Length: 132
Image 1 (cartoon, rainbow, N blue to C red):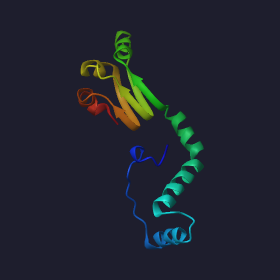
Image 2: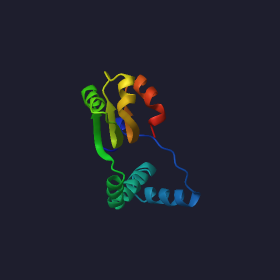
Image 3: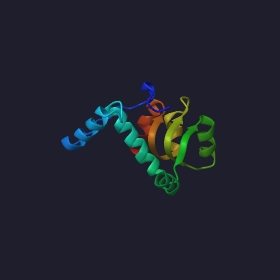
Image 4: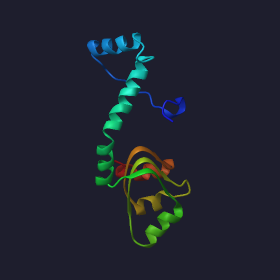
């Protein structure tokens, strides 16, 4: 759930003094508990307003929404079929820890992850030029 300390990322933003003053006024008047509460609410509202655009972009860019995992067996099957995969994920993509770098480079053509990509250091190093 959003807002849990272990599941949030810290960001820094720059605001002009007038916008910051307007936020402070809303906080003082009790509309929001803190500046952070205001900003978090504004971001969530904007994301909700943009939901359709996000969904259309995910579909257009053929991104997997959520998680995608590649086991050694999955990649061996691709290698045996003479195929490669383009990993395109909005969320989390993982490559099993037992996948050797040689198998990864033989079967993974590219990696584009908006979120997190987890693989062994050796696999990440081997795929380095292919990671967007």
